[in-house]
Length: 345
Image 1 (spheres, rainbow, N blue to C red):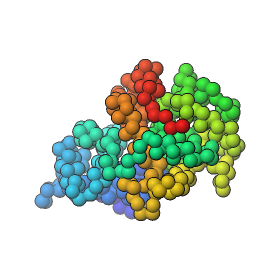
Image 2: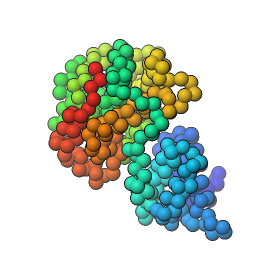
Image 3: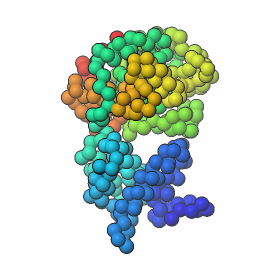
Image 4: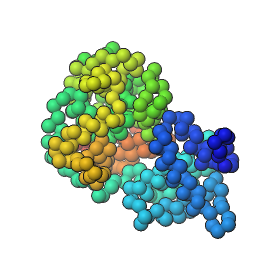
């Protein structure tokens, strides 16, 4: 087992090994503690009397039994979170060659937690959301909210966007920066990478947030979002960052890349004005940046009936599936998105 003086070994203490690695990858102490609590609890559940099953030998039935044991003790959303921790642990250990397979893959497919929505969340209809967007006049704040609502990306992923990640057919005023090679031939598109991690350098700048996508994703930009982004780019302050962030502060941290805390504060302040945010309200009542991801998922899934396209846009699909949607960009993803994406303006 791990000690204060020895680095955990993948053979004798795979959980400790994993925890050390995510720390090296820039995960916060809070995130590490959350993983450790769940993974050590799973370890203890593999103990039957005086015999203990090594984590590496856990089967999908062992994993299902653990997930089942959580139900009734915690909220369903927490069950989903704990299952995702276990899934990421096994996926990582398999990827680095420490484990032979990931028994959580089948469990997650059966649970389908990555696309499931929380039925206890506040329900906001499209007309009310349009009124909310209409109440936001500041170009930056409107661009933030409309981008989150139109793409379903996370706050950290929004903060990590650079100018090169946006390819508008009619670009309007923007720095003369070439778009990513992956956006060539794909006008009116937004590229969301999988790689940026908090504390690590990407495109010449240390990042304050991590992207959480399984794979990189190219998301269509419709006429409404393009218009809002052009309006923002027309007033976007110059920045000292070599990465040229897409979204930068216009307040105390003038010209610096936005952080997730800044995005949360902006959304919270407007949600309070609409009565959609109260202190201590929790996820069931409060509208936060993550609520917009829920809104996007629910409305687009209901409109399209195509869970695969929605999963692709959310970045929730595996390599074989994402390859299919990438290759069918012009006929499946973009066409479905443009036909079904809701109007906000």
